[in-house]
Length: 213
Image 1: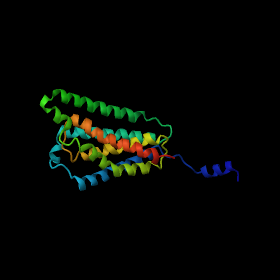
Image 2: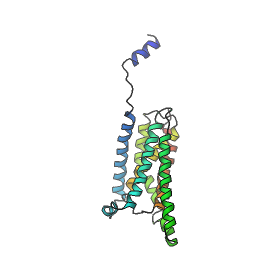
Image 3: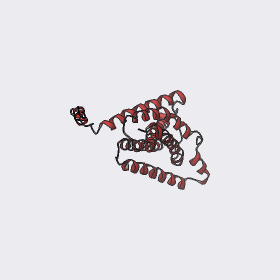
């Protein structure tokens, strides 16, 4: 049998992969990441004792919307970077918008806060632990997402790994908010962003090797 005939025989019954297939798979892995991070949080740190009342405050939702926005941007980037030649512009725009909004809120809060509160606004009481805790919560989910992405077709492995780290880091930071009582926008803009950024850097370093064809 000629090679051309063999290729035609193999592809005769092939159907195109549905466009929604990859986002649906990533959505499932997003749920897995949330569950893993929540389990680690509950076993390790627990949740804040005033969570019920915190859910009624705008500060809690400001933080949650920001970290969820980072996760959505990461999702969009992963979905695009898992396809050869696909544009990742949408995810980059979403990421830039999230950072711009939290930065603007942080500047406004700093400008309006008394000078004596400046250090508290910037450092809170957990600045030296927050980023590392977010990174730790990200680790199980990052492994899961990178293993899943090996079945896709990323052509820029380091960038795809960074996107995976952003996706997982955003979700893990959202889960961490169930424990963390820091509410100042400057704190969130710096230390939550650093935690998600560390997850992205680890994803890039790992993806550079793990996602190679």
